Image (cartoon, rainbow, N blue to C red; front, side, top):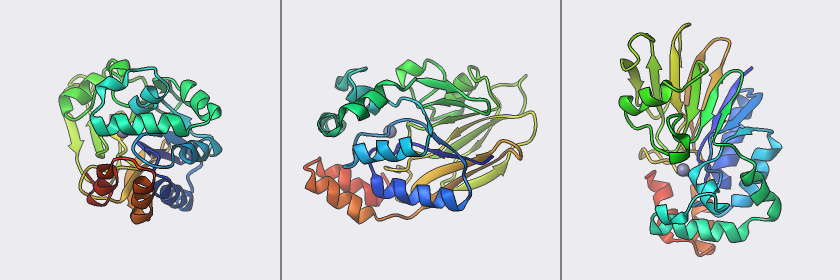
Length: 247
Ligand code: ZN
């Protein structure tokens, strides 16, 4: 089994299709999406359709939750709120029902899944440091958890359960690591649709539960097309501009 993990697609169909093609070439046969399928990009409905066609395991992101009214859009900045309102008007009932069916966390045989952190998942907090990673790891039931939300890839490895705050940290835009037996890990898979580590290429992750190899890969995609669609849709121009900067 090879698990392909996609995060923070944010309605960017060009990036999503590039990532799916790359993951298929790697022989992914189980798909995961860590939330925020929509918001920011111009193709929220087609992105939901793609993820459903893959049969992916999906959890709820904060933008997804705001679109269906499960949390208030008041917590978002002006540009994000404009995209949330726009997205809500684009989606058909079946899309809204799909988002409404998503859970905050998923416990799968091979992994835990949450958008922000397993520590109070309903708060949509960020894991940006080893301290926050340790809080999430304390709630983790499986040997690996997949998260997103920050749009920046990261890996936190807990080698010794007796020293839960002593974590090996990998902050790299793309990497591969072999996790040994007995270690637990928290993987931020980065963002498909709006990377924020100054590398505009779409990010996704691979995990093989048998070998315990974990990878984050980057894929170039037709960013100009995604930007043109955002501008044509009348969404805030900054949401297009930032894509080619990777911020
Ligand atoms: Zn996001």
